[in-house]
Image: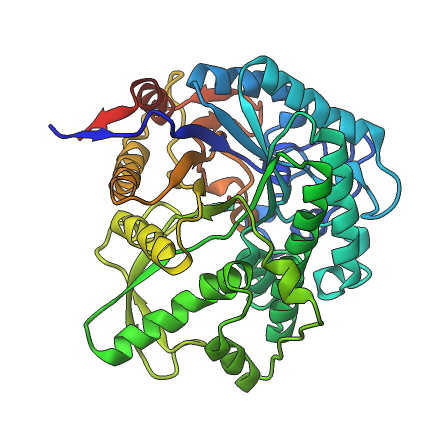
Length: 447
Ligand code: IFM
């Protein structure tokens, strides 16, 4: 047996997002987001699933907080639904929507759990989409006003904030690959949205300094890892290009104040221009307190002529995949964190998401999800290694507290450490819940 140990000061947590868990889509003054519209469009989400009811957390948040308390976490990361608090995207605050989050925050604090708020986890008010959505710079202004209002409402009791979750998904997956809302398939739209999201991040950070002077703010990009298949230069270059799409494109502007020129030129060759306005890069690159990292998967990569934008062919390390089909690559987690630290320096890191999709069902009040425990053990072992290597990891938040609406996969794909029956909304903690609880209590586990 080997003991995998964590420092005493590491913060443990769990994460969710508004559209994935809240439900109550048309209650309390909430108006539609782009995900309401997208999920109700036939053919966009498996089985026609949608977030109308989701996990019904809007009504069951107290029960969910009790599970967090039982789990023993230090932090809970959740997102605010912009269309719940500002239903039209701009204008008046909706007091009922604001009250819901105030209640949730109070409940967390009363139970000694620190809230970590994400401002944008993809549920853009549909009213803004109708005016151009993130392709329009007006949405940046709207986001700044929304962020300011939330800082003013909650900044006195919540100190940790995340501006944008997974900007790669909210831009390229949603506007170039067409898989997420709003479902566009234009590279120019992907590039425009990616840049506007980063400017919106910068504008929110600027306001945050005035409104919550002692708070901590960051953002949460998703990164995978691609390890060259051989040490042939063409494989190394192909992996570098593919990684650049998630890593350098979304991190260089924030930490270096520039976009990677190689990718700017590659997009240009494909007919998509990066449109910078004076002052954008200064805004985007304002100092932040932490980087949030979401990691799930990785692979080997080999150069293949004509393969996608980057001529990089993805080759799984072996045949181990989670139920959503993503290759398992725990060592990639170590490598990507090490690499980020070497590239951007000692920026404090929260692992804002990491977890696995396994679709075990509940049987006699139990869910035996050994595979998820194995996945968590391997990935947490990578965290322990990278901490020992000197990378400043401040916290780890498992994705997710609950099985929930997994976007284009609907409810078929389960990431929770708590099973949810989507007919009755009954919650059943899985074996992984108890394993994680034990790990939090001990600060170590054995392999
Ligand atoms: O469910 C998502 C989450 O909303 C964003 N990060 C990845 C998770 C699993 O796909």
